[in-house]
Amino acid sequence: MKEILISLGGLIVGSFLTLIVQFYLSKKQTELSLSEKMIERRINAYNELYEKVKELRFMMPIMLINNEDENEKLKRKPRILLDLESLDDFINKTLDIYNRNSQWFSNDVVKEINYMQDYLLNVRTIFQDLTKESKEVFASDIKDDFIELGTIIDKAILPFYKNKYLKLKEDIGLLKWHKLRKEETLKRINNTILAKKYINQR
Image 1 (cartoon, rainbow, N blue to C red):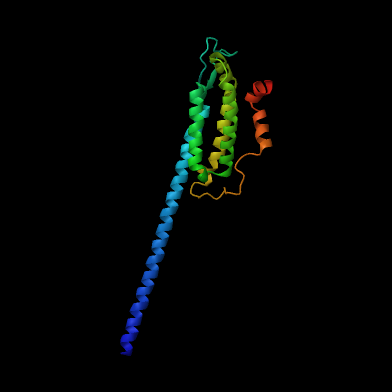
Image 2 (tube, rainbow, N blue to C red; image 1 turned 90 degrees about the horizontal axis):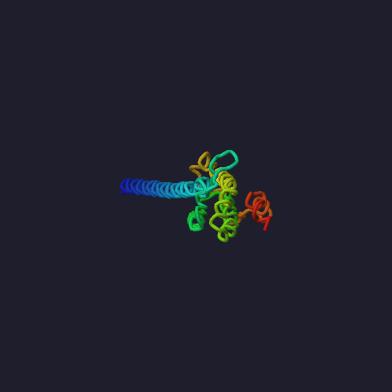
């Protein structure tokens, strides 16, 4: 009877250890699957944002008879300033991407997206009241602002693809400030062509 009890005890211990190992492996598999899904969501968020903001640098010729600059090259404007509807469409779609994915973006990216929204709000305020011809001139005048804005956002996004591709969201938190300080926002906007040629001249 003693030997039987010892044998049964060994079977119980072995079964218990097997259950522990299976539980541990199942837990690790669940954690791995969850991490993979979170990484995939973050990758998709960055890809979607990148594809949208690169439109800031898409240019097209202005639609005026006198559409050449002093070097006899066609004057260009941002494509999203084709008309007010195009501008609103870009703003709304970018805001939608941000609202759905902001938890996946780094703090630097969030700040630049918020700054872009501030800048575009000022652009829209002026753009909506201009005549058709004045819209073309205005859009051409501030095209370099759009190129610079797109470049700055690209630089904020780039570290994710370079060295944070597989990391989860460790560089942004609820206690971090997600917008540039008001003073910095005003300083940057005041250094744009938009402010120098239009806002500060009003």
